[in-house]
Amino acid sequence: MKEIELVKTFGFDAAHLLPNVPDGHKCKRLHGHGFQFSVHLKGPIDPHTGWLIDFGDLKKVVKPIIENHLDHYYLNDVPGLENPTSENLAIWLWEKIKPELPLLSKITVHETCTSSCIYEGK
Image 1: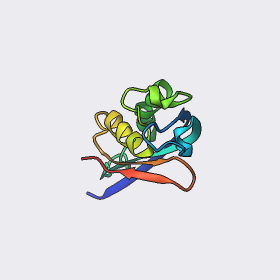
Image 2: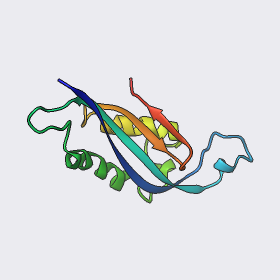
Image 3: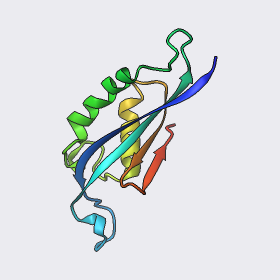
Image 4: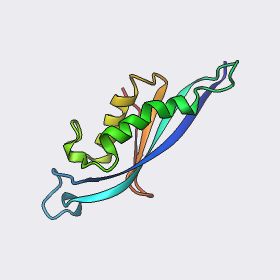
C-alpha cells in the first residue's frame, strides 16, 4: 500500500497574552492574532476510495474545537492554555484531535505569516 501525508489548514482569530515572558516584553500585553494551523495526517491510501480520509470528515472533527474553544476567545481562559504560546497551542490541539483522528502525524501552528511551530506528538 502506498502511504501519503494529507494536510488541511484551519484558521481562527483570538486574543491572548503571554504571562511568563519578562516585564516589558510586547507579548505580555493583551493582543490578538489571526492564527492558522495545519493538521497533518499520514497513512495508507484506501485502494477503493483513492484517499486517506475525506476532508469533510477531518473538518467534522476540527471545526467544533475551533468554534467552541478558540475562535474569538481569550486563549488564556481556555483550560490548558493559560500560557498560550504557539508551542503550547500546538500540543493542546494535538491532544484534542489525536483521539478522534489516529492518523494525525503533526500539527503546525502559524502565529503570523512568518512564524510557526510544528508538534509531532509523542
